[in-house]
Amino acid sequence: MHFSKTYSQLLLTLPPELRQSAIQYRQLKKIINQIVAELNALGLSPDILQNVVQPPPHAADKGKQKEDSEQHTGPRIIYEFTTVDDHVEPRLRLCLDSDDLPPSDAPGPSSSPPPSDVNIVLPIPPDVIRAALGSAIPTDTSESSEGPSESSVAELALKTADSSAQSGELIIPLVSDTNFFRTLTEALNSLAAYLVTKRAEFETTLRSLSQDISSASRPSSSTSSFHPYSPFSSDPANISVSSHALAITSRSDLDTWRQIFQLYMEADIFQGHQERFRGERDIEDAEMRLQTFNSELNERISKGALKLRMKQSRVALKTFMELNTFILDLRKFQHVTAEATRKILKKHAKRTALPLAPDLTSPFVIRPDSQDSALVLSRSTMRSTETLSLSLLLVQALTETLLPIIPHIDDYSCVICTSLAFKPIRLRCSHLFCVRCLVKLQKRGEEHCPICRAPTVLSADRSNVDWALLNFMKDWFPVEAKKKLQQNEREAAEEEMQELGLDMKGCMLM
Image (cartoon, helix red, strand yellow):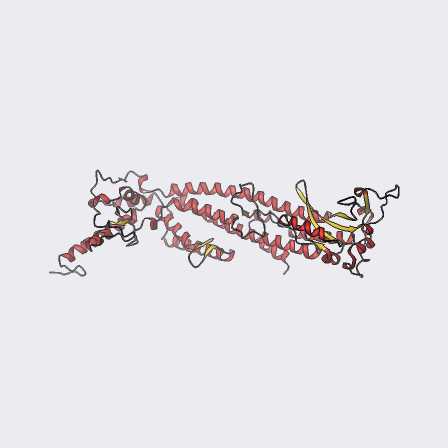
């Protein structure tokens, strides 16, 4: 299947707003045919050019190119680009010896005219090309080029670098080739402006979404039932989390959003963070993971494991999935646009026998030192560490804006029992443990901190309670804190009964 048909089918899978900004691949193919016709009209068919044409010098090779040009005495054609106003104009520089120059049609004395006044008409006479390029021209194609119509006859100025030099340079502007690169760069610039707008809309929607999630997942302190503890008015031994704190779940989806974000982090949709794979995932893998995440989310909601009690939460979840879908569509669009650009430039080089064009700018990768209005990408530097994919930038903005709204329980867990560190005891070495794990360490006579090995365990007492963190855990983790307190009380009772020599594994009727 031809790429143009594949390209059209791939665009049909994308939203209409992205399809309207796509590169017109078929139009560029038609312009390539016009370029070939123009070269043939000049007497420079692809068969001739592929043997003698030289690529344009890169900026880093200007000194070397100048040195090579000074050493090169034979005829040659250089394919180069000049910047005119807001676009580039490709042209051919035909280097001729003075003996090969055609006679001027301008009337006047027989003396040689000034170098800038020597003119010839198109097509270039075959004997001039043959004399200039020598054996590079096949004998069966030198006379086969058909000249253009009278309306396309133009004059080209023959320029010389030095009036005393024995060689000249014939500058041949390529009108159709200029149209090709103008069309391609205008499409890329239009796409860049569109993506700047979409990025701004994405960030605006993201800020609004973060406010909605924050409002729908209010902590316990947003109600009058929350009463913080204080070392001046509370006894650490009598700290409890009232069951009334569970009533917050009827007016807040805090626990639901915590589970949603936990599933999202485990899915690793766009980026891998595991040891087995780190970095940006390919499109197929990301699409499969997004579908799996969506399916599992819907399944839990249908079974009642996840309850979105507030309408605001249901709207926010829909917006959250739409943002992820947009990022995936952007990844697809980036891939198909980069492939279309690569294919059309390769086809341009193959059909015309002109060298591959220099790197073009594209809007899908952002340099760290660029602002919103300076989105640039070089197709040869897409994997450079100095650039950042726009889709990856949006993923980072999504995770860095939304995930911190809901504190994650792993950030406040005890390193020994791996559950919520409630009641939190902070040792003099600044390391944190739950009260039950610390009591067990003290009963075993272990003096050193399990993390830094500092001798701070046996000296810990009620003054080591972290009251600010205790209130924070009670505020944001009411369900987990109550479960941990119940577990601690049960374990303490079992240890007390064991110390008394009573077996609590079974019940005995007297």
